[in-house]
Image 1 (cartoon, helix red, strand yellow):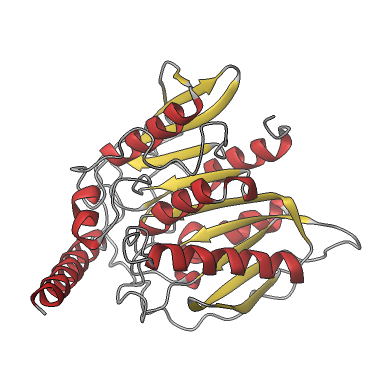
Image 2: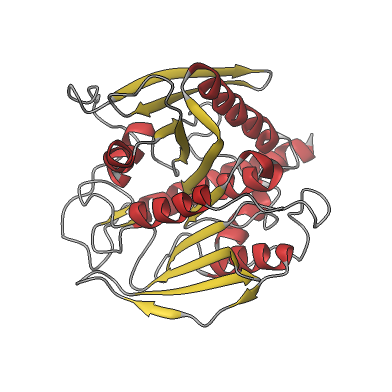
Length: 342
């Protein structure tokens, strides 16, 4: 009985801390316009895109581990026989599909570049802050949610004209942590993975270790995230991390890139500093195995816990950052054009 109480107290303490960092994250970054953020956790009902803008379709994936709702964006005017790439987008804590789509504006890019976007939604019954349970490996919640996410992907591939050879996954915060974990567990299903402000696989396995991992006090040991022998290739990784992130320590971004590099035997290239107009500068470091980029780390100066270049009216968005949406798609689309690694 005392163990149960101890476990319950850990969960309550974790949720209290998570609510505190979520409230802190809702404060706009210091360089962002001084607008009161809109809470994505309780968005106003959103209408379907205007005529000609594409379809915003609801869906439900059900399996032994429960059910999860999702939204699918499908660009307009599909041609007979056309099969499109699929990008899976996993929202962060305090967000849902509509809020994440509004913040990233990924659907606008998907309409122009012609790909579908799947937005699975975490249920409040699974986590009161709508966080994906990326850390809950000991009690099996992480595995259960991964199975539901794969069911949602399979369902969309079955019902929609998706090219199964061109699927990628991206996420923010808890969604980024889950995206990276899913990519290491099902590497053959994804051609690329994008982590924005997330924690690397292997850094946490329970509620007791999750907060320490977020603070950068626990980093994955070499080989801890391996889904099998090193001959199992992981999809190429793009990490976007804010240097001023007070919720997920920037050490996690570096750790994720190094984990991917170690797994593939890749070497770091010289970092290059880039700045586009008046947006925050960024340092980009590529990790290459021969001529192939295994991982790319984008360290954004003055960026907090927010989607870089996101809509200013949304929570977890910094309009002054470089455009993470464009960076993510440019990285993913490049992987789609390259032949799969042997």
